Image (cartoon, rainbow, N blue to C red; front, side):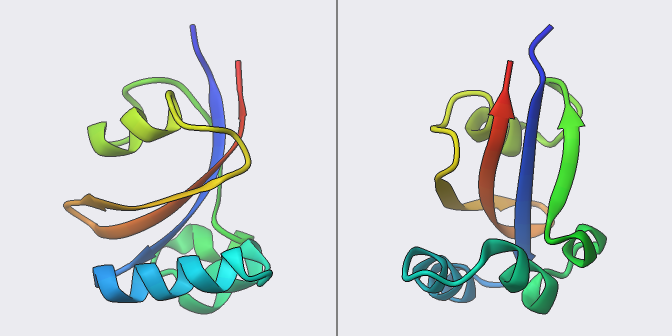
Length: 92
């Protein structure tokens, strides 16, 4: 079965998500941004979600994590929790 590892940043608005994505693309560290801005408890670990399989995350999340490019910031991805920036760190 497929497995992936990813980290994410969860915020309440698409505007904030886009602003943070731009900061990361301009060289700001993803983990530091997650620690400062993510409303998810994973933010304390730099947004690290660990390893998971298909179906363990919400469908919008799975779609990106199991098809998107590795080590690239994806998003904003809207879910019932808010807006996410996702970085897929590995997939097998």
